[in-house]
Length: 283
Length: 283
Image (cartoon, rainbow over all chains, first blue to last red; front, side, top):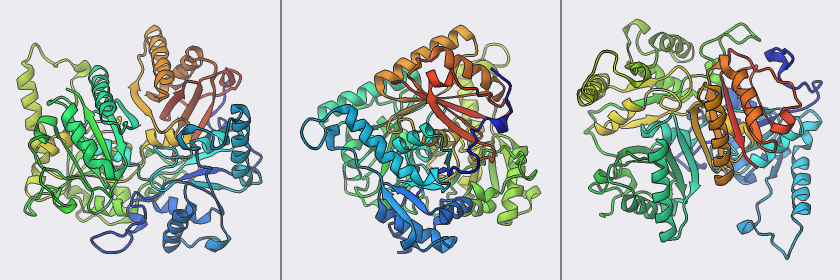
């Protein structure tokens, strides 16, 4: 391999290619803080440098256009937007077909893929003419337990520089807050909703945690928080350390860790309208 | 289970117990930005609310006292410290015995554990008398690919509220930047340095990635970045998507994803003095 310096490692674009900026959103989903009745100050969780970058972006790719406009109004209160909100281009990410099936009749997988590639290329078109494009999800970092990864992959394929910006991630805050093993951990998304399948998956993930000494993290749709909690208390081993982190970065947020045996003696009613992360480490 | 509201879920401490605040550090290790010759502005990566919290903390538990003082000097430039730096209490985390072995002769594991518990209790003592305690590592969030988890666990056991604060995490930035699967991913720490063992572990983790459709993330000591990169190109399958994220949040940082087959045709000399995260997803 030829010797190259660090500065040369980045592909060059003749100064004409824009970047894909991965912009973190808050974890509050724009809801007012119950303690104050106001939307929390963006500067509690998003760095000023990131807010200023966001204020400069004219082209957005968003999980949800409406919540992106709400986010940009909060940005504008800290760093005035470079253009009026109405003048910004905000394109929504294509929604995946329900259940992974094509919506109508049989379709050729290859033409489906090339159709998606065309959509992604169109979303990234402003970067080809030198404009930075912002990618944003409804909460946290795009592409982490959230849509957006396909756009990032398309940017890499097109040689568009990708720049992830620092912000809150509920998963990593939960992991740090849990005090569980942070040298090896896995996030496995959602568990099955069917009770028998869920029980089996919990046992499987506990075995994996024990064998690999690996913290396991999962999330759940908020209204199912209590059901998942009960399932974890029922199917994990008594000595397993179990954490629940709920509404982190919000004023009413908390993170708690105890053994399953102790949890079975404690009372804890989880809210059904606040996102939670569940983590465990088998002894 | 008795009905309890969300606000009641947090244990109460009669207003007398301090909190353990998990304070994020930058990812620049205090090094000056090569582009400007200055230490990067803390506000590029740390939210103002977090900087203000850090400025109020009088008791610190640190991976490294010296780098914590350097961090606090940067905090002071944004939000004046509530006390002079010299007046702050900064205690270092106990270092784990080398190789997991006791330093001298045979020792009873139980007394070792109770010794550690006593050390942790002493570190957390200020919280028991109502003072917030800050936990900080040399980069990123404490307890995530970094020491500190034992202190957090001890805080949970003692009923001390744990509050993780939003900041940069190289792992989650690398995952977002990679465009690889973010609905299921695992961080597995370091790979073995022995070439044969490393090759075997790479193949094992590729199989796991394929079976579970799970992105795998690893880190390496910076001077071994090029050796790990070559090993990944040699032992992963040609169609596997491989990402390297180097110095994220720094001005010279980058994140790049391509297939192993394409990487074998590209030239990329990784720096040997900047931390990198490596991630792959098997096709």
